[in-house]
Image (cartoon, rainbow, N blue to C red; front, top):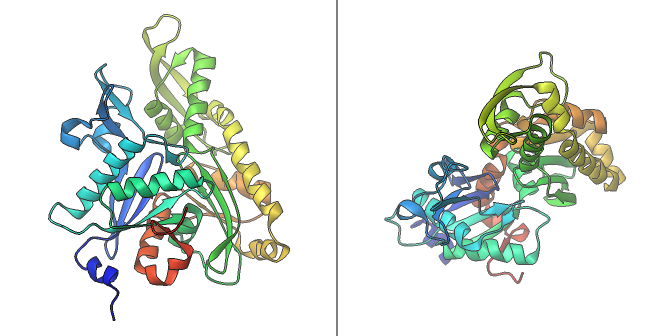
Length: 351
């Protein structure tokens, strides 16, 4: 006998969503990642009305960040991995679900959404409610480190320790897993956004130059590093002079940017070592062979694996396509939803 819910699945597009602070990725069963857009929404100032008939979401809205006139606000509705603006998140999710599912479907999809492991019951309820009101038929929540580990291809179901460090936009998730569950986990709200913030502060202090989030992110991607590089780089940066108020440009080096990133990176490294210190001896022994896997956008920072390896003495490798690990993990959950149901929280559970 086929369950009624599975029967309805034939008439809807079930999807896995990595609801990230910086980007939202959507996976569809059997198709892989079908959408990867910034978690940004442009609204009419003073209201929650999304511009362009509800379509100023994602890439369209990100291009407006820091460049909007007085009548428009570009909002990132997630902060530190959790919903900071309920209505805007709902509008964004509704747009993404509609875009993936198409307007022809009359039955809402089942949705698996990844959430940071350290969020509160109230924050979980906000994710469930947003997804339901955005049009989902059933909502399941999976913890981000678990989804990242599965997406990275780690043997989480086996009786051996797997360790993932997922450095996202708003949170860094550090977890040790064994036998299809999390044995030890720490979630810290220091991640990619804090690296950008450190660069913005450095430009203010050192050069009296105001730069925006997008410029800081570009500096991080182009010349940012966690460990010394074989060939150091320079980059021309444009912004607004804090004294004269006029536009100005200056040249920065990769060495000074690395110095500026030390504080948030040290916080992440300390989180990893703290998690390792709390691990059971047998799990710690497994990690000597299995090492650490890095996922998330922060894994792409040059030298991130080197500093972790130096601090822990463990081999640290970067997952294949680290940016999409969590999304791919939600997709695998979706494909094996009956099997994994016990590890998922859903809208029917008491939270």
